[in-house]
Image (tube, rainbow, N blue to C red):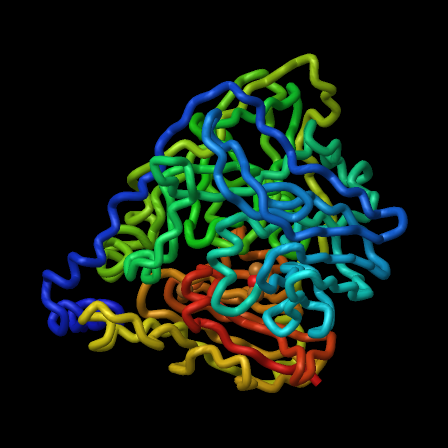
Length: 496
Ligand code: C2O
Ligand code: CU
Ligand code: CU
C-alpha cells in the first residue's frame, strides 16, 4: 500500500513533472567551515533579577562579521542580536523602545504571559514609540528567547538581528549541581546560519526556493560570530542552545562521540539528565546540555545536514527515515578548546536535577483539535507563483480572524500534522507535553516541557492555557520556519 506521504510525493511528480520537481532542489547552502582562533563571546548580560526591570532598544547598526567589511544589521541595544536578560519569577517590567523607521515587537518566546503581554503581531511598537508591559511570570527556570513578530516581516527582521535570549533562574543551580557561571562554565549558544553577498551584506532572498524551504545560509554564526572557538574550563560545562535560525534544523553531535547530557528542554529542567549522542534542534527550540571536559580533551560540535534541504526534503522523506536523510553533509558548528586557567567547579554529571516533568496525561482531556500544516502544492506553486499556499487547515493567517477559541485551564489534545517537509510548530502562551511523535514515544528532546516541537509527520500534544488572551491580543500558533510563518502558516486563538 502507498503511504500517505509516498502518495503525495508520487502525485506531485505526476502533476509537476520531474523538471519542476528539480527546480526545488536546494544544494547551495551547505555550511562552510571558517577557522579562526577568536574566542566565542557571550552576549552582554543584563541581570534583572534584582528589580526585574530592563531596557531594550531596537536599532540599526553595522557589524564586522568579516574583518574589513561592515554588514548592515539590526539589534537590541547593540548592532546585532540582543543581550541575555536574566530574570526570575515576579513582576517583570521591560521597557522596549523602537528607534527604527518601521514597527517591531518583542515576543517573549517561552515566557508564559497573557495575550496582552505576549508581544505578538498585535502588539506592534511603532517607529519612535515604546512599550512597557508589566507582566507577572511564575514558571520554572528555563532558557527562553525573544524576537520581533510583526506579521509579514518577522523573517526579514529576525534575519537582520532582532532577537535575544532570556534566562529564567531561581538561584538553586548550586543545589542541583549545575554549572551557572555565565560565560565560563555556563555558555549561551545562539545558533544561526546566514548567507552573505560579495560585499559582506546579508543576502536575504525572496526566491521561491527560500520561501519553500525557509531561508538557510552557508555560514554559521554563533552569538553573531563567524568561526569562533568556545574556550571552556577543564570541567563539566553547560551549553544553552537557542536555535535562532530562520529555517535551519540542526542535528548536533560531537566529533568524538562524547555524550551530551540533556538537562532542559524549552520550558525547563528534566527530572534527570538524559545522555544523548545527538540533539535535534529546530528553529525556535532551546535545549540545555552538559558536556564533560574534565578529562582535558577538546572536541568539536558538528551538525548533520538539514532534513528539509535537497530532494530529500521534498521527496526523500517518503522513502527513507529522518535519520537517513540527515545523516550526510555534516558541517562544523563550534570547536571547543580547554583553558585550564579558567575556574572549574563541577566535575561530574548530577544524577538528579529534580525538574518537574509534564504530567498532563493524568488529566481529563476536554477536547481534541487538529492542525494540518499545509503547503498547498497547487498549480500556483508549480507555475512558479507563490500565492496563499502556506496555511494551517487550509486557512492562511489573517490578522482579523480568530481561528480557535480555547477555554482556560482545561487540557486539550492538539494533533499537528504535515505531509511535506518538517515544520517546527510553536504555540504562544503555554508550555505543552508531547505525548506521541508519529507512532513513537517522545524522544528525550521532547520529553520535557515544550513550546515548539518539530513535526515530521504527526505529533500529538497535550496543552493547557492558564492565562487570558482576548480578541484584541490573541495568541499565535505557527510554523517557526519564519518564512512559512510570514507567508501564512500561522493561526490565532483566544483563551477565556
Ligand atoms: Cu518565536 Cu510566535 O514565535
Ligand atoms: Cu512564541
Ligand atoms: Cu513550516
